[in-house]
Image (cartoon, rainbow, N blue to C red; front, side, top):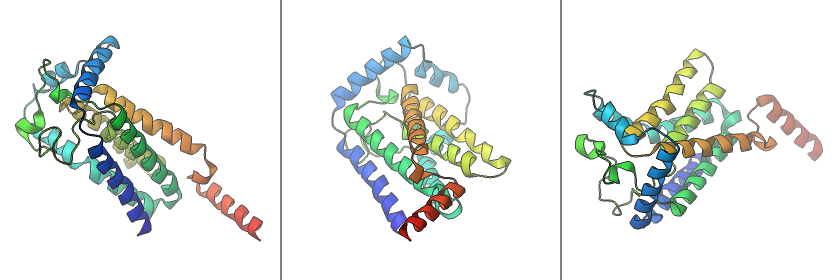
Length: 240
């Protein structure tokens, strides 16, 4: 129960913090224009062209919106439950990774408010969630609890990568490799629905990868049963 409460506080603080980071639309649109130009300089694919190309296939739009709205939060919650009940040796590390990545993302929301592509005028984006439904935003930008100027970074993509990493790292059997499709599909969907730029997903993944690497260097967060058992025995012998 304590662990459930702790992670509830972490995720709740992140969501509440996103709300308090709202309210700088002029900066958010200026950053969006700057990021758009930067991506073109770096020769990243044009998000609007990708969306237009994708709309050549009928019937997938609502499914993509459903995936964006329905999968992200349940996936990370189920992943935490799976880690706690089935792979307790890795729980301390995963718990820290989720907390640290949420804190890093929140800091970026404050420092770099960013309007998503669907709000960027002059590039032909279609707000697929509002046009086709369902939408995860029940209010206009700047209103309500949801911060629609928090596109950078995308924890939709970052945490999808974490779930896939966890499934491959801790799981058994070939089935676990199916989860590799989760971050790939999530990345494509957040871009094609015009909720994020490519850079948002890249930064979200980078935060997760760096945090995973950093936690791998901390002995107390070792996710290997033998190492953790050895550490416990050493602590017991010192205490004796």
